[in-house]
Image 1 (cartoon, helix red, strand yellow):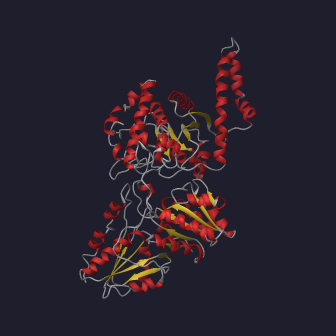
Image 2 (image 1 turned 30 degrees about the vertical axis):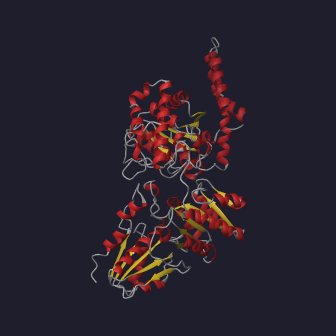
Image 3 (image 1 turned 180 degrees about the vertical axis):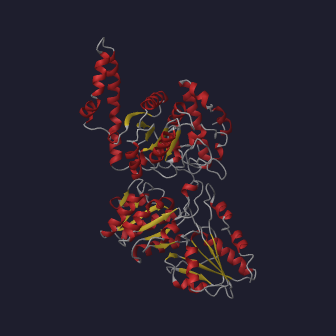
Amino acid sequence: MPEHKDLWKKIPDAATLQSLKKVELNELCDVLRQILIETVSQNGGHLASNLGVVELTVALHRAFRFPKDQVVWDVGHQCYTHKLLTDRARDFHTLRREGGVTGFPSPAESEADCFITGHSSTSVSAANGLAKAKKITGEDGYVIAVMGDGALTGGLAYEGLSNAGRSHDRLIVILNDNRMSINQNVGFVARHLAKLRIRRRYLRFKQVFGKAINHIPLIGAALYRFVSGQKDQVKRNLYRSSTMFEEMGFHYLGPIDGHNIASLDEALRSAKKLERPVLLHVLTTKGKGYDFAIQNPDIYHGVGKFDITTGKTSAPSASFSGVFGQQLQKFAAEDDRICAVTAAMTDGTGLKDFAAAYPSRFFDVGIAEEHAVTFCSGMAQGGLRPVFAVYSTFLQRCYDQLLNDTALLESHIVLAVDRAGVVPDDGETHQGIYDVALLNTVPQMTVFSPSTFEELEIHLKQALYDVQGPVAVRYPKGAALPTSVEFAPTDRPYTFLRAEGAKTLFITYGRICSNVLEAAKQLTQNGRPTSVLKLNRIKPIDPKCVEAALPHYHVHFFEEGTPHGGVGEFFGNALAHNEFARHYTVHAIEENPGVCTVSSALQKAGLDTEGILRAVSGDVL
């Protein structure tokens, strides 16, 4: 396979793209796929979804002029080809690297990216707003929303469709239907789309019938207009229903072959001529062009480095997600009240084996986190013990349901908050640095933050059996950071590692405990005794923790999350209420780190060992 640095030169500019013939277009799509495969094999990223939209993206760039026209990608991880066609091909080898091309749309990166979309089901609402702005300001151009069929499992998609369909704006929604999102799609929408896929019979019939009638001398045109006026009745007779999209006000086109550029060109031209909300239903194959991705689209949805020739990915290493899945399955074997819920993240949250072992107690609700929380609250009220495994960044969608549908009822649901803290590679939309501040405001909520695999097992058991009301167990992506300081896992709310004669106290929790302990060890060895208060339960804060902190002259709190509303802020308030008048400082992540590695983000925030040592170097003893 040619090297990427040579391949990007084969991508034509926007003007040349319009004039390419069929053979040249097919060759271009091959080149684009080679770049995608080669780059993701080296950097990791979202492969299968991007391979599936190559022809669709090329057709979009032939039919529209960006940025005068605007496209919103949903979810944004399928925008790689769009980036290649909008002046980022030269730098595409830096994909998902710090300072490089991001893995999601970024208006800060290019004016061709009009909206940031890292979470699902937002595109139609955003496109609806952009189209309305064009209409009110008199600005020319179209707005296109490209949404995967998985996005239709999210409720916001329907709120957007319901309003956009009656807008009368130049808005085109392209439904990229590959019959799955990350895992197989579930529910009514999947069945409805399956029904629509057979409508190609109707479309072929309409084309042939229309041409035949129009060729009838004298009466052909009039007869065609009459038949066209009865098209809704014809469709009802043939299919006994209209599409739900038509009921929402969209002009429905499709389904069409999403890998045939000629068909896509024609469909997009037709959609533009209508100058009203259109839903174009496109059928694609996830992973097209790379057999391994076609055969395993879930594995190659978001994949790390892999060998292009063999398709082999790196062997998975031990992770908090994997340990969580194993332990939950172990508890479920002994307690048939335990159920597991996920929002289209079965593999990512470590629940694949649980789903296979206990299919009647496993629920993938699709990309519907809000529903998942209220669903869990209902199960809890019915006597079950539901566990909702959710990425920290997606938990943000659930605040209303946590507050009103769960906390007020004191429903005993367990949130397994995965990817808490810094999350590498995916950028600002996927950082897990806000969940603590969110959960701190939910009444009756208990929050555990294990630092090791052993602590995760202990805290998960406590969450299931020792706590009333809603409870969260939050843990990072991957494994714990290495440390030379040993401490025994405990079911106590805190671990106090006292250094004799210490005037300085470090308080922390979660993954960065390793760095904090290492820094305290070095300070103690260098003649500055430093104690460490490790919080295992971060909400509510045990009063004994405050008592332990009061005698110290310098108290430093280190937190892998936002300082605003975080544990450090709450702990500081508790000290103030106890008339602590000495030195107290919170060290946390002030700004979203964006695309990063964990080590780089912690270093920039001063949460690595060296940064912690620098933070206390100016303390007067």
